[in-house]
Image (cartoon, rainbow, N blue to C red):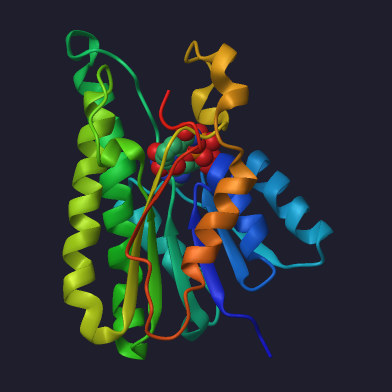
Length: 234
Ligand SMILES: NC(=O)c1ccc[n+]([C@@H]2O[C@H](COP(=O)([O-])OP(=O)(O)OC[C@H]3O[C@@H](n4cnc5c(N)ncnc54)[C@H](OP(=O)(O)O)[C@@H]3O)[C@@H](O)[C@H]2O)c1
């Protein structure tokens, strides 16, 4: 039997890469992002487990790119899982946050998730089956200083996910928002936090917890999940 399909944005790095590798045991995985070299690294890991995947290069902020992405998926009736994971973080105070910083953050973290979800939601509705996962952040529940664009994008992402959850219940579509604390991924490169990176959550540990939530059976859905390191926030 062919495997169900999972589509994962931001699969070239960090949380998206780890989720793609973990989920490839159960799903045929489509790996989505812009950097083909890094996507190929994820593909190699998956193939080393004797699992299968395909790369689709796409910038999720661009409507045309997302629509083309959807067209490239074979066996569309097998799509069961969308993971809106791609995201960027710009940590600056408001005085130094440029309009470009603001637009880029909102475009990737919010508009990208909207475009991806919109592109395939009718597929899920028709089948009366599907799961949409949003990799949000602890910063989508609690504000942090010097990250207003990021916090705004993640609060809005929670609102978007919560709203569609209500309207998609009758279509048997599960909407899951995940709110992780700090995880040691390339997102933190060049952010002056080198001395605390080893104390952040391990990305594979986090992703095991996320996959556990995705796998809630039958009519159970883990709607929102806050995952922190045992010691709490930094
Ligand atoms: N690390 C943390 O501490 C942490 C905590 C809470 C939540 N999160 C959230 O987790 C998610 C993943 O973060 P991460 O830590 O894994 O970061 P990461 O290692 O920097 O990965 C970010 C991913 O997003 C992709 N991406 C960025 N812009 C894109 C675009 N326009 N189109 C398509 N893909 C794009 C990147 O791929 P390309 O460069 O190849 O396009 C990359 O694969 C984000 O939403 C982040 O906010 C992270």
